[in-house]
Length: 474
Image 1: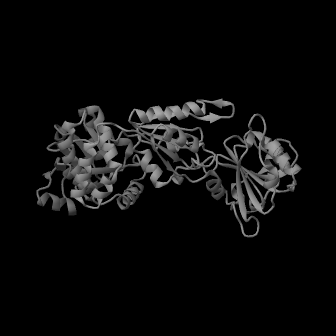
Image 2 (image 1 turned 135 degrees about the horizontal axis):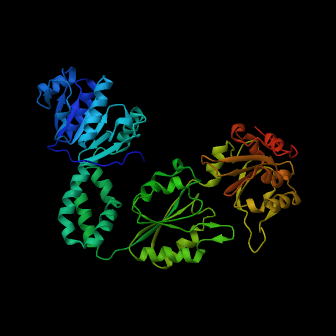
């Protein structure tokens, strides 16, 4: 982070702007909106800046720049086409200890002005650190389209309600009360402008707030790419008190959670469990009993090899409210990222999802039902047992030349896709150095893979002096 985003009170403060052109006028308008006393230093004023002076919005020093004119200023901004003047302004402001911005010259900026979205008292600022102001404005437009128009009015209503109810609520309970209110029907009701109903919902919430009740959300984080989070999952993540997350949840997704939320890692890898499942279950119960909003964040979907049912059952047993928020499954997300359809009219009329990890040292699967040539087989958590799995499939009748894809870090920026034949998979996985997390897709649909995403095994084999046994499809 090159610049710390802060909001500065400028009401009644002197701000010096050096320059009388279009850019200076545009920057001055931001300072005026913040209530600053803007003083323009320039031999002449042009266009919009002249109009602003005539309207009494700015004062004007009709002269060339002199260092003494900056004395008493809270901020300084220069927007001239004379580089010598710009550098002189920077040097003088720095010597006086005043933060200075030289327009479009990031290296000469102590502060930068973001692209701003305003909704009444709500201000959203977007910055690219000076790298691309145009892109910042583009993002602001997208946010403007996404954010409800009544946000400012909702904020004003909340201020009134806080003044009314905060004195009646214990200080340590206030945050949870207002968070729970915003997560209730109150928020949507207020956004629709039904103010009396919104006030009634708040009053009802206050009447029943004395006993804090926690809740748990089992949230699917999808296969890894944060853009594949559902809108509901993202909204809930940003209101949580505690995030309990797995090894398969990407760091990019964790960074989308509320900054103040407590984060508890309970990742599980083969033979290396940070917490056993029964302790994870109990942790969720204990946190909820403390009145906290707990997010149990899982890779993929909680109900597809995520042990979500076990956690939900224990929570229900202890009377804890539990809501499941589905996620895009690893199978569908990763298949899409590689161009492999899970079903295809010519190649596969069904798809089977199975887990490939061992139970008491044995991969316990119904092998006979997995070898149908007209289905797609997707295997989760099977990388460490790839030799056992492929051999069992061949032994039970699957064609050794059946196409197979092993995808490491699917949907993420470091995704790697190995495409091979069933009988070559063990050797090719070792040669390519495929690491967990990895998903296996087996079947004729693998022929549809996007060639550009695949590891070039022929080249890799030559580089490592290994026999060329890679098979490419697509």
